[in-house]
Length: 344
Image (cartoon, rainbow, N blue to C red; front, side, top):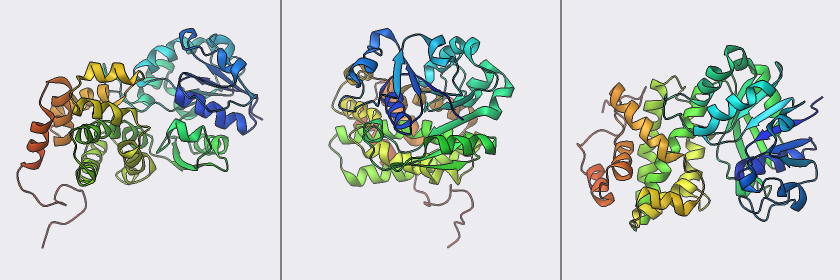
């Protein structure tokens, strides 16, 4: 029997998952920072800063004390930004029981190492944790999950039993969970699509339309598969919920921070100005930097990522970047997609 679930990170996604799990009648403790007003969630039953309008059930309490939050928890959900995961794990390490399960929800790569979140977790906690580690990913905006709008996601683990346990934990009438053994692919799909959402936002900010977005998303999926396979992902994963599904929702939704940041940049703001205006973590910005570097090192062709990097970090005019993409060398559409013949 599950006695307690701890969620580390009281932003919009952590609060939405706490609400979901609380409605599943689990005892949930939500940990966050004092400056975020996390303790008000217990008294007001609402996260007014990050998820206003969503009522948090009475089964959820909140605290700024990490030891108190983790104590006695059977499951710990990691709902902090990817660049904060290592620090939070280092802080949490002394409080975790040997049999505690971890579920990561961050979608990004660590800038300093290029590691996926599973690799960061193993680096901090040791190889034994991998049997009890899972990642939850897919097209799932917090604003909609918190309001019980029907959503489907994927949970991946190297251990079949861990994946099934995590699936049972989150399943609800409004939240359908599939399983997948491909941890690398699920984590990479969630990370790489954020770059494309930024690029799509820039295109919208320039005044381009649906044709442009469709072209970006379709060709970007080829980039995601190309990079994902090189880093150990199964290409089938990238046409599933954590790849194509997440790409569609992040590029097309008004809730997407990455798309909104891209729109502001397309309208003339700098990256720093756009991030300040969004006021929350935009995972695609640091991910673009590390993925561009990895692509250059490994000789992997990623023209959309390269163009996005140049706009974000080299002050390239966005319209010039679009022109570069449109005027690249002619090619067959399927020639760089594994397994497809280019014969006429």
